[in-house]
Structures are given as C-alpha cells and as structure tokens.
Length: 613
Ligand SMILES: Nc1ncnc2c1ncn2[C@@H]1O[C@H](COP(=O)(O)OP(=O)(O)OP(=O)(O)O)[C@@H](O)[C@H]1O
Image (tube, rainbow, N blue to C red; front, side, top):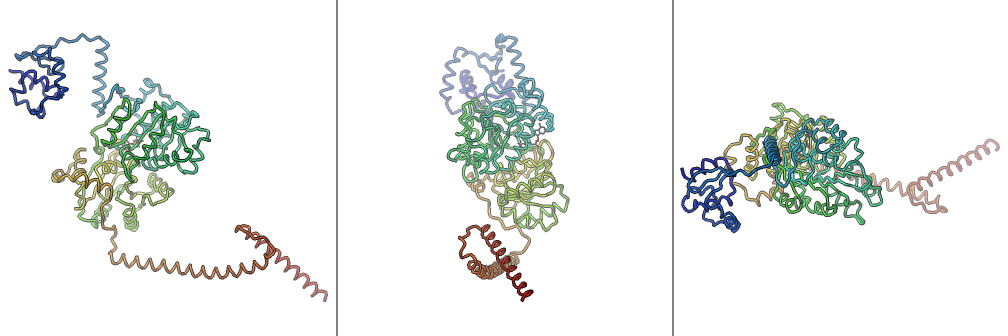
C-alpha cells in the first residue's frame, strides 16, 4: 500500500484545503508522478500560488512526512505514525468538547455561521434569563406571544452581534431582532430614538410595530411608527421632548424627515439599526431604496451602533457590503440559502394562455378551496381587472394595491386578517414579510418576475411551521424564469418535470429586464373585446351627458346667483365688502332679519291704518 492508497482510504468524506494540500502533495512528489490525484487538486497545470510557495518554505522541516489529517502522519515510505499529541490542559479539552457540542446542535438546527467568536446559540428562552440576564417580564411577553421554543434563527441571532441573517420565510426573524433590542435598550430614556427598524412597505412596518408593542409590553419603551408626515415633523423635531425609543418606518418617510431643514428627526443616538428585507432595500433604481438607505445609514452617527440585516433571501450585493462595512460581522444562514420554506407544497400549472388562467382558477374554486387565499398578479391594473371579474362570481374577494388609499389598504388588511375577506388579490406590495396567519393557499396568477420574488410570495403561506400550498400558473410566455423557479421547487423537495431543469438559462440581462418591467399580457376579462369597447363608449357617453347636465344646472344656478347677488348688492351698498362665505351668510341673515322687521313694521302700520282708518 503506497502513500496514495493510504490517502484515499483515510480521506473519504474529508474536506480539503486545496492550496495546503497542493503544497503537501508537491512535497511528496505526488503531483509529478501520480496524475490520478488530479481531480482532487483542481487544475493541476497551474503552478502553486505565491502563498503556497511561502507555506512550502515554512514547512520544509517536515519534508519527510506528508500531513494529511490533523493527527495522522504518513512517512515517505508509506508507514503511518501517530502524531505526538500536544498535551492539552483540561480546560482546553473542555472548551473543545463544548465547541463540538455547539457544532452538533447547530447541525441539528441547520444553522450555519461564519465570523469570529460567534456566540453560542440558545436552546430555550429561559436561557436568556440565565445567560443574558433578560428581564422576567420580557420572558413572560415572549411566552404570552405563544413562543415556547426559539426558532433556529432566534437561537443564533438573539445574542447581540452585528449580523447578516438569512432564514426562511415565516421562521420568526421579526422576534429574532426585536427581542435583543427590547432587552438592550433597558427601558425608556430621553435620548430620542435608540433603535430604528426599516421595512420596505408600510404594511410590514405596521405589522412589526404591532409585534414590537406585544413583546415590549410593560417595559415602558415608546415605540413609534411614522403615520402622518406633518404630525411626525412636529412630534420628533429638535424642540420635542425626545421621549421616544424605537422607530419602525419605511425608508422614504424617514428620509423625508431627515432632509428637512433643520432635520425633523435625529438619529445620532441610535444604538440599533435593523434593515428588514435587506436585499429589497439594497436594490437600486425606482423600485429599490438604496439611496434612501444610504441617507439613513450616514445619519446614524453613533460609533457603537449595532447593525443587522435580515431577509429570507441572500444576495451577494448585501453580503459584500456587510463584509466591508460591519465590524465583527457574524453571518447566520438557516437551512439552504434562497430556498422556499419546505412546509409549502408547491405546484406549477400550465394554463396555455391568459384566458386559461381564469378557467384554471374557477376550476380550483369548483373543486373546493379553503380560505384564506392570496392571489398575486403583476400590476395594479391587473389586480383591478381580476377583481372586477371575480366580484361577480359571488366570491368574498377584495383587492389591495398601491392605488388604494392608505385607509382602504389598512381596512382590507384588517378584514383579511379577521376572515371577513376570503380571497385577497394583491401585487408585489404584499409579497414580502406580511404575516397573515393561516393562509392556506397562494396562487401566482401571474408568473413571478424572479426566483427571489417567488420565494417571498409563496412564503405568505406555510408560516411558523404550519403547512401551506402554492400554485403557480404559467403560459408559454413565462419561459424566462421557469427554469430557476423549477430549481427552487426541486431544492425544497418538490417534484418538477426534468425538462424544466434542462431548459436554457436566460441571460442575466433578459432576467433583469423582466424584473424591471412586467411583461405585456392580455387583459383579464371574460367579456369579448368588441363588447368591452361598446361598454367603454357607452360609459364615456354617459359621463359626458352627466357633465353636460351638471354644466347646464351650473349655468342655471349661475344666472340665479347673479340675480341674487345684484339684489343683495342693492341692499348692502352702505356696508363694507364681506370676504368670507361665513360673513356673507351672516350679512344675508342680518339683511333678511332687517327686511322681515321692516315687513312686520309695515304690516303693523298697515293693520293700524286698517283698524284706525
Ligand atoms: N418562537 C416562535 N414560536 C412560535 N411561533 C413563532 C415564534 N417566533 C415567531 N413565531 C410566529 O411565526 C410567524 C412568522 O414570523 P415572522 O413574521 O417573524 O417571520 P419572518 O421570518 O420574518 O418571515 P418573512 O421572511 O416572510 O418576513 C409569526 O406569526 C410569529 O408570530
């Protein structure tokens, strides 16, 4: 048995540092003489890098031996000798054993970490009291929320560190960042905001606000959300009492306040900055918030600030920014990055063409559908069209999109939460973060613009470990992202036809284009086009007629008004001109009183005359 055979036997399943191994292999002349090791060494033709050369020199004193795995050494003649074990102290041994235990636990929970001195994950919430000294009240709030055990992301993220966290949809990321904030702020102060949480939509900000109030109950912390800008300017400005602690906001509103002259809010005492849905907020362009995030980032001047980025999806842009800018960063990933929650049963449904979608949906309804259901479409126009179709089907349906007023949006969300609405048609606006408990089915009526969007959309079901289902309609026009979405499905254990995975990958440019601009689709309507045109014309004519009628009655009113004005002008010749409507009315009342007095006087004198001719 030669060195190579021994190496093969003992290296089954081991991970190698190619660079280091290259050096060792060279030392034993394995590279020159034994080409069979090629695949393990990567591209063999390449000469070792200067770093490798350096290592070769340093390790030259061991030239007669090839170190393969930690404690085993192979001499040139092939015999194995046990490396003299370095004497380890009992405390070192204990530390080693503890680390092994931690690693085993992380493996069980599918937690992977990177960074230096990563804190030990907690196994129970009670541990937070013992190890991190969190208050019994906070622990009680956690329990009152119904959280018995921490989820994997909570296990690893609650111990305070700057963090880049990636964990599946519905896995409890919100509490993972709220609990450490509530604990570390240690009650109210008069320093202005000390924690800022940025969310991409107002709906998500409101939801996080609610969760924060629930977890911070009894702690005295003042948790705010920016509802009305005008109110916020007065409330948080420099003249205010600075009696606020946590702010949950969308980037635009906060930036608006920061850009006032003088700024209507100060972030100088912020100790925590949380960027929720970080990959969304890092997106540049009209749909992204990158510039706004930069303004917020620079306004948080506190040098000991702790920043954390959370999302269910990981993008290299966020990761590289964090690596460059966040000191002692800890990276935490739960499960496999960029996969859908594995509790969601996913299905792709070929519907032929646009008209086929309505047929397919009605078919699903016929077979029986358990509400609540979310239906995603690509634009607000299509959301309105689909709503107009389904409203006549006798289904309890409503729609939410950016064109609806804030009050309407709030009411729809509320109604859907309490079960008043069974089916909610929505756009990408509701794709991220929204936690509707118990959504049974997500229908992607329009194909998602990217695999990332797909993961978030279908993540509205299957939350907190509950099962869920997602059906995605597709037509021949949806081939660009079919492959990547099929891959996401396969990665989370769903069956997909092989041909989808073999499809040609669309170029990055084409995919980006699709993300920026939704593809053109036939309108959603069962009414034939000519009938639709006829209805449109009819509606136009009706509107015009109404306008004309209004105009006519306006003209008539104008004539009457001008007559009345002339009359009153006569009576008010000696009065100063009245400006406001209120004053005008007062004058008219006064005049009419005077007139009626005159009239009664006249009548009285007339009667007198009549009585005493
Ligand atoms: N430890 C826990 N035990 C049980 N349920 C929990 C726990 N932590 C959070 N939850 C519940 O899980 C649900 C999902 O949590 P959350 O909204 O924080 O998910 P998320 O990871 O932020 O999802 P998304 O990526 O979609 O934003 C919520 O209803 C929340 O109340």
